[in-house]
View 1: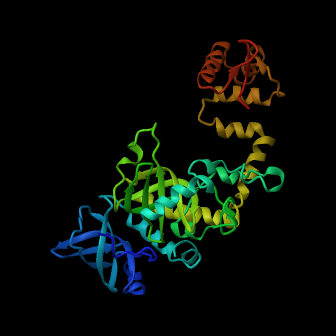
View 2: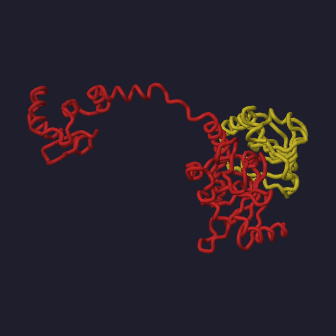
View 3: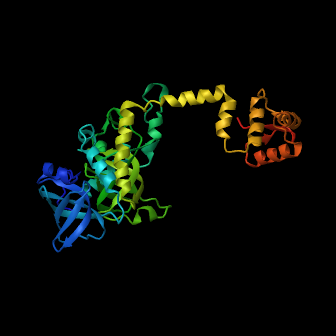
Length: 113
Length: 268
């Protein structure tokens, strides 16, 4: 199920604005599910931007808040590889502040890559 | 994987990599002068997996270091990528987005398996343990593994890892200037402080406390007759009211009796 993520590869946590920097790379996108539409869902990333997610064949999207582990197709679309259900209560502002700190140059190369 | 495992067992006994034993590393550190057993080796510090994968070790018995700072026990949060149960231990491969790392938990025959029994793939777990290496491979010798039930803990862990890394790098934040002066003010002017601290009390009770505090400090405190006389003189209250006020102060713990029931003092 998790073949897409090879050991050497990172899956950095991102918000919608950061997707453009990760095209064709793996990311983790914590988000809120807005709309389910067959094979694809629309989610709201932690910075409020909307992202289209193509579901993995056997994905279980159960909760309001999920973390999409996937590959970035383009700055507004992610191909899901796995889905982590995060429950019905998540402070997206806190998540976004955390995502921004992860990408802060003071910490990114030292702690998150 | 199976080859790795058989290597592991044959090498484990002689190589000193044996799970629990190495935790008592004060003895293996003996080479350093003065038998310095650092306090760090007993501490538990949150990390990202990328930090763990960058940790270095001078030789196989040396302490691990991250950014040149010694580390003791480590705490990480990651997603379980795979679970492999074996007779003597379980191996979990964890990924937290910054890298991946193996965690091994030894099966304790005495304890129930309740702690590790239900660990599921794809879910986030928190792992506490010590960093070990076997050959070129490093892993966490886990003392504790549990599922994350509140997703905020994942982000808290990231923020705490950043905080602790900064703390180790720069030292603790300097104390706010106010802290010291507030303390010394209280020392110099106890009655002024009493005013603030006991401002919620009725005037009579407050004046009793102020009176006791203004006396020269003695362990046995102040005799009740002295209190009654002084308070009666300043407030005009009768002895009965003063006695009631003292009882109330006693009940609330603001004053206490010392050598006998007639001597009162205030907690310092």
